[in-house]
Amino acid sequence: MTMLPDLILPDDVSTLAARYAEDGVVPVRGLLRGDLLAALIAQVAAFRAGDGEGADARTSVKHLPGRSIVRGLAHRAGPMRDLAENDAVARFLAAIAGVPSVRYWNDLTLAYAPAAPAGESAWHHDIPAFPLRAQAMPTLWIALSDVDWDSSPLVFAPGSHKDGALYPPSTSGEADPLPGYSVMPDWEARIDSGEVERLWWPMQPGDAVVMHSHVVHCTPANRNEEHERVSILTRWLSGDAVWHRDAYSTPVPGIPERDWKPGAPAPTSFLT
Ligand SMILES: O=C(O)CCC(=O)C(=O)O
Image 1 (cartoon, helix red, strand yellow):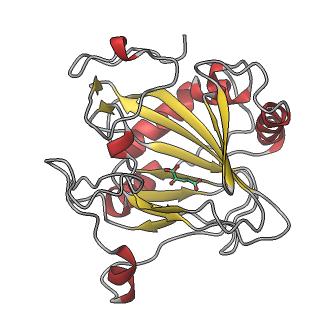
Image 2 (cartoon, rainbow, N blue to C red; image 1 turned 90 degrees about the vertical axis):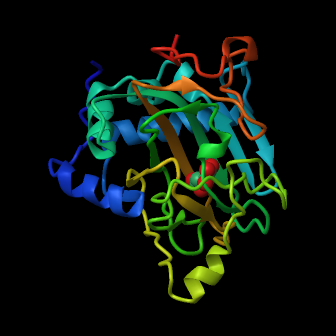
C-alpha cells in the first residue's frame, strides 16, 4: 500500500456511515493536507497548463463554457494515482458505504472559471451516466480550492438517494425518460416548500464529501471574481460490479465499447 502521511481518515466511521445512509452524502473535514494536497493541486495545474499535452484515451482535458474537466489523472504516476490505489482510502469508503470492499474505477477534476455566468451543473444524480452497476458506488469528492456560497458549492437534496429512483441526466432534455427512469422532480420547489433541505458546506482545500451514486445534487456557476473553484472526484465500486448499458450510459475513458458487455463482471482493476 502507498503510504500517504497527509491523508487523515477519521476514526469515527460509524457516525459518518449513518449520515451517509440517511442523507446520501457526508462531509469529511481536512481529509487531505500538507504535501499531498499541494502535490495534487500541482498535478492538476501542470496537466492543465500543458492544455492536456500528452493526452490519450484515458487522460484528457475538455474546456466547456465556464468550466474545464480533466478526466483520468489517476492513469498517470502521481498523487491522484496514489489516492486511487490507497488501501486505507478504499477501506474507509467501503466502511462508509457499508460493503466489504470497493475499488477505484474513474476520476475527474472540475475547474469552474471565476465570474463565469455559464458552467453550472443542474440538479442531477450521477448513476445514469455510469456504465456500471454495483451495490455501492460511492464518490469521494475533494475540494482543491476554497468553496463558499458564491464559488460553486456542491449542493445536495439530502435523502434523495433513498427510494432508488432513477432520473435521466440533466443534459438529456427528454420529457419522456427511458423505461425505468422517472421525470426529475422540481427540487427547487421541494426546497422552497420545506419538503427537502438545501444541504451544502463551505469548504477549504483538502475538505471532502463522500456521496452516494443516487443522491441528487447541483453546482451553481462560480460568481467569485477572484478564484477558480476546483474539485477532484474519484469514483469507487463494490466487488459485485457489472457492466451496464442504456441510452444514458457514458463510456469509461480508454475502455473500448467491445470490452463493455452488459451483465459481465467489471475489471478487477481499472488502473492497468
Ligand atoms: O461541482 C462539482 O465538483 C461536481 C459536479 C457534479 O455534480 C458532477 O460532475 O457530477
